[in-house]
Image (spheres, rainbow, N blue to C red):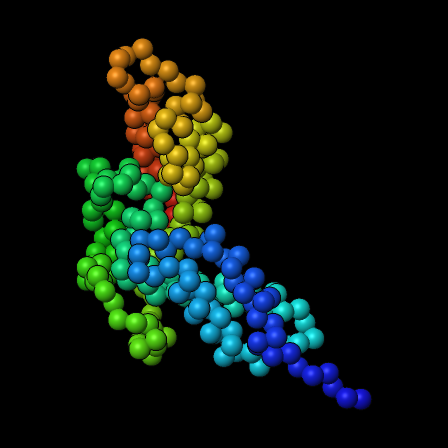
Amino acid sequence: MEQPKKKTYEECYHIIDTVVSKYQSKWRLNAINWFDFEDVAQIVKTHIFKKWDLWDQERPLEPWVSRIASHQIKNIVRNNYTNYVKPCMSCPHNLGDNLCALTKSGEQNSSCKIYAKWAKSKRQGYGVKMPLAMENHQQEIDSFTDSGVDFDSSIEKLNAVLKLELSDEHYRVYMMLFFENASEDDVAKYMGYKTSEKNRAAGYKQIKNLKKMLKEKVQQIIAKNDIIL
């Protein structure tokens, strides 16, 4: 019996493009402004092209493409994010402008174990403004060994404990402030805070106290639990 003709990469390109494009909403490496999702998509598609013969064409294409895209994006984040960006950029305690809700000083510094580890091994790459094209250094990229902290897993563990120890209302505020980029006005409206003071934002004192409480709670959890991976 004659075997069916295998589909080519070009014939399936529209499917590949659709699957890869779905990952754009998950791309969070915005701190490196010279490296956007178009670059990511091109790297992923090139890798799929090179591995095309490995696709078992008796199986659906979409899951295979999705698996490759997921792995490649994780590699790209690992090989770039940990080299060029402070870990504070993805930390829920980042208050912006080098401020931190976790440290006693309120600033991003080496009193945080994650920051200290980055400062010791990754700080040199932070000042790089115009790295050379990745395709010219593929060997170095492929051989890169990640010695950083598993931020995603650490944050997931922290949040799981916080969800148990905080009230539903306070956990919602925590998510709004540190994960959803909500403004203090948004939090004040959610909490129903008001103010009678002229030129003062609603709930400014209450929100300040909430941030302090959340900071202390996070410090307690990290001290008592094996959170940092």
